[in-house]
Length: 152
Ligand SMILES: CC(C)(COP(=O)(O)OP(=O)(O)OC[C@H]1O[C@@H](n2cnc3c(N)ncnc32)[C@H](O)[C@@H]1OP(=O)(O)O)[C@@H](O)C(=O)NCCC(=O)NCCS
Image (cartoon, rainbow, N blue to C red):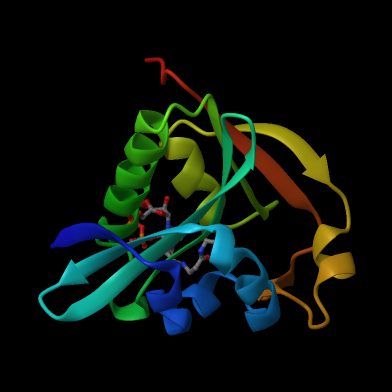
């Protein structure tokens, strides 16, 4: 498996839609994002978009792994690569917004992200369709932040 940075215009939309059900929103942040992909041979099995949001601050906007390749460490490897790449660009912090329950919350915290805020009703206000995970509707968004340099 290899991880490469590619042009945002070549980002794999089918994967990005797994993490963000709104194609319109993805097309909004895609042009100003850096795009990283995981390849296994010819197949693209993971993707991640990161966008600058301020002086020395970036936001991870989207990360996804192909369904048949999930739970095998691909996402963690991609996330670590992106954390390193953003850190090397001189960033002081990397943020991500995610649902207040579910698998991605543990996935991010395992890599050192900490909860720094909550946006109540975010998913109700910003999405036309209910965002459902494990049979439950997402309402609030947690903001998680990873601060550089990464401590023990
Ligand atoms: C979130 C995502 C990128 C993680 O990638 P991944 O390759 O599956 O993750 P990894 O195998 O590296 O890590 C798995 C860890 O993530 C969490 N996790 C991810 N999917 C999970 C699932 N279906 N069930 C339980 N835990 C899960 C667990 O903490 C798990 O650790 P464990 O296997 O030791 O229990 C992937 O599941 C995905 O693409 N999901 C759909 C899109 C999405 O929700 N993106 C995040 C939006 S905020």
